[in-house]
Image (cartoon, rainbow, N blue to C red; front, side, top):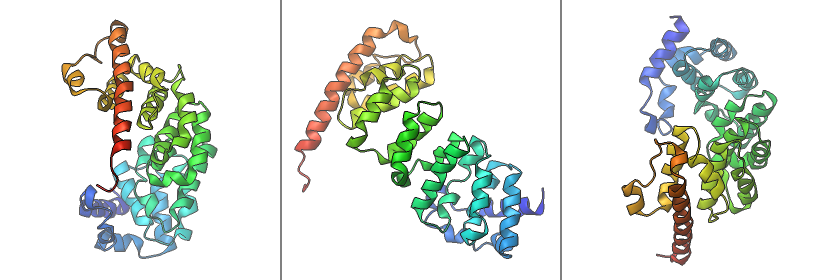
Length: 275
């Protein structure tokens, strides 16, 4: 283990619990190891960037990105994006939350990430936009969704979920009809239900009838809030079983979900906002 790795490991071990990290992140920069890693300005930035270029173990890469955020952005930000463009999915995930701690406007970071995902042909970067800051790149994400390229469209759809509004119903209807991408179609259909529309049931059916058992299970789990308690507890659908043996059950579930969606939205509309 190199000295840089030893120091990063010391910082990692001193990190607060994940749920307390944001509130207590200043403590990260007060450790002796962090002060040693950050005490030389540009030289410190270059040291951590060289470490990230070697595609290290993700848990230590995560610490390195967090530490870089404690330095002025001009010392490292452009180079950090260059490195991020070449990272695989696991290392991209390691840039969370540090990339958002960089001392720049969150909207600029969001725009840079969306642009990088396109120019670097690395759709994994869109995973970093699964947060409210996605609203700053809403239109760019919509264009990526409509590109109908896998996995770009699905990753963009996951990010767009954090900035959805009724104005997005046309693109969701479009995606819910994609017969060649059941994961995206099911996700879009479920989000249409959340927005009060049953026009995406074909996409939900695609998820429930997918050859991928994990997708069938995830789709059924997300559909459950629109079904009665009796239906869910009764286990009318068995996602582990071949979907071609459960066509009638799926049809019945979709009909019930459409009714359940209507009841939910009527209830929300009738609720007194002052209560």
